[in-house]
Amino acid sequence: MKNRITGLRAERGWTQADLAKRTGVSRQTINAIETGKFDPSLPVAFRLAKLFDLRIEELFLYEWTQSVFDQ
Image (tube, rainbow, N blue to C red; front, side):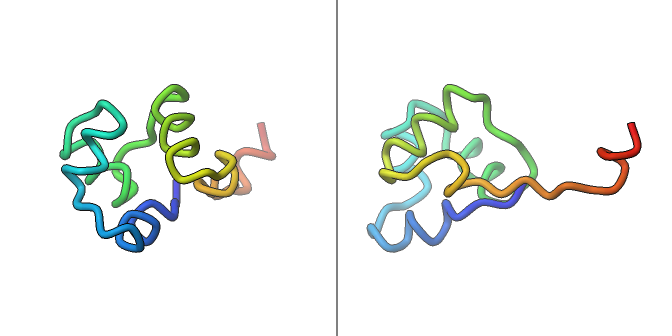
């Protein structure tokens, strides 16, 4: 899932460790979310959205594929 976290974090001058501390997860988790290797749980997604004062759908972009519609 694509997201805007890297840019929003950089705008605030925060490191991944800073963001991790603010959201209660590890720096490695933030890195995995930012790089798209891991999709956050809903509670983490809500915390991130609240922290950046955005709706979840403004922070994350789900890429629909044809296979989703074929089911």
